[in-house]
Length: 355
Image (cartoon, rainbow, N blue to C red; front, side, top):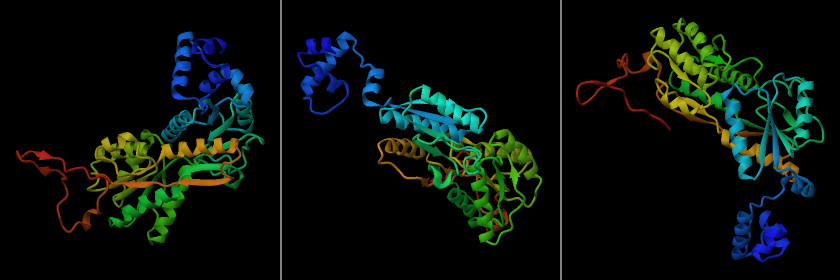
């Protein structure tokens, strides 16, 4: 720092203010200091800075699965938001979600010098008292049913599922089948409960629930069973990947989408607009979830953050071509082939409708 100050012709205190981004340094002086830093290859000592400030500018993230699209998207959003706030992220996956593993993860993050922790806990743990988080650690939990014991940020799972079911009911379908996620998933349970209650409110009888594991393969296997149900005209899949497998199974069994069966997903992954047909789905705002997690945990570190409780991020319906009115309720129009005749006489696909 003394060498930088000498070359730039300023005091060491001015170099410190520039390197730490503090205000009160005029622009010309700041440029001189930065030029001297580049010339000497000067880098502030982050370890010394952490000891002086009492913070490491690093957030720890504990997650129990990197195999689901939702967790990956949430993690990406947390890392992006943390970087915008000048924080790095240290990731610690936990293979077995038990109390001992969680305690071990917090201990390891402590050794890695993090300021606070975000936990992506997509399975039923905190709500079932199977796992508790150590006291005295600033924590925000994403995608969990931790209730009022912790600060939680989550997508409005129930609201999104209600919108999906109502969309299909509004199209004239008598009922809606549900391809649910795994039983230990908080999000899957919330979506399934909302599916069932929305049908009940509409006076519709819920069909038997069909369960998958979030994968396209499980959606395909479930779709083979659903294709045999001739009274199945509408399916709400709990995520887009299972919906992809479902579309394949219906196609192989000769059930056209949406002419015979309407399909709606949940997540709005980037590929969903390229499914065949493009998938109507419920959009999750992963970026907003990540931003609120990061801002929440930084606020707690500064003692001006969110209190315990849950913040829900709204969803929205994205309507594409995989949903349509129930076949016999289309005014007698023959929709057995959804293609239209193009200007050259060839069959052309109808235009994509998306909002």
